[in-house]
Length: 113
Length: 112
Image 1 (cartoon, rainbow over the protein chains, first blue to last red):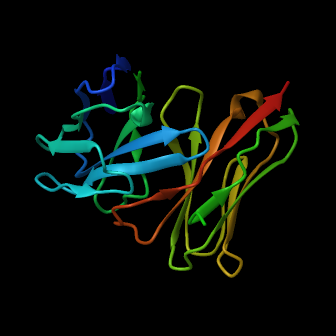
Image 2: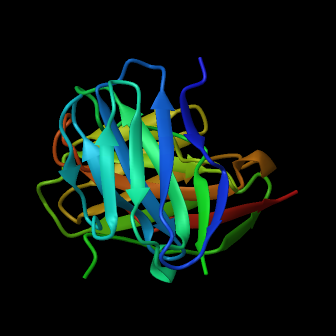
């Protein structure tokens, strides 16, 4: 089992460029999440998907869109990247009945210049 | 005011010491209290969780929740260099809550 995988691992974008971060899990989990982690700010929830076919905004959704492609995959899109979106992005998944136990991917380090 | 406050450290202790990590929170409705461990350049992993008040022990790790004071702690006994990591506290309202609120993390270093 690979757990939660994320691609790419690193990315440098110029302001205004777009990109999609990919996430997949092989644990048959219902819920998936996208977080960003910034120094001193902890993990902040961007979007989550409680189950296939549903998505909801988290704490910091502005500038992002998501797609729950199927039960395994949850992608995060930056339509027009800004320097404020420089961060480390983590995808996570959990079983619907115990969402306190989240399994995280290795992260994507994104720099926007 | 943040919902969850955590001292960012860094905290440096000698090998074998007892480590105490703490968080305070403002929402008295939280029922699930978690500690995640994050090694450098890795994703967080769940270390322990506690439901409501009380203590929970797992090997060298003990989690304590004091809901009356809105204060949670993680104790590490006989600390090892391999415990060097960032420790994030986290809280949720329900077991199936869609949102977890994370603290900002405490960076811990165990000196051999």
